[in-house]
Image (cartoon, rainbow, N blue to C red; front, side, top):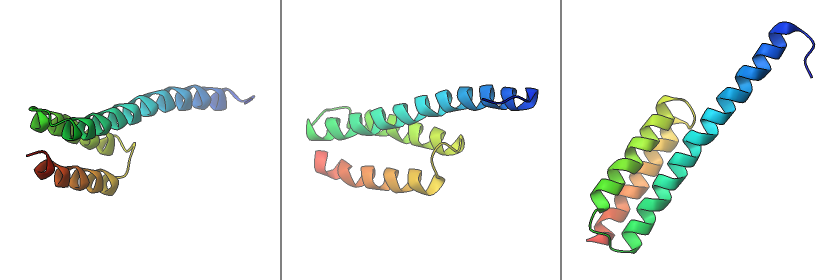
Amino acid sequence: MPIIKSAKKALRIEARRKEENDLTRAKVKNAVKGFKIAVKGDAKDVAAVFSDAQKQLDLAAKKNVIHPNKAARLKSRLSKLIPAAK
């Protein structure tokens, strides 16, 4: 455990940021998984689910939770699944 006051504060900030980042990662994971389920289940609102997945990936990349290239790669892979649903 930190002894210095600034180190204690840094630990609190780190814990708060980790919580926020974990929540963002969970939202991305759920959005991507929901899209894949929608494609497999031949849902009618695939475009809306894809839009939500893109939004979550862009937000995570903007917040530096995931790398921007990873977000782009995942969006590309998801977009390739769209024609399979039609």
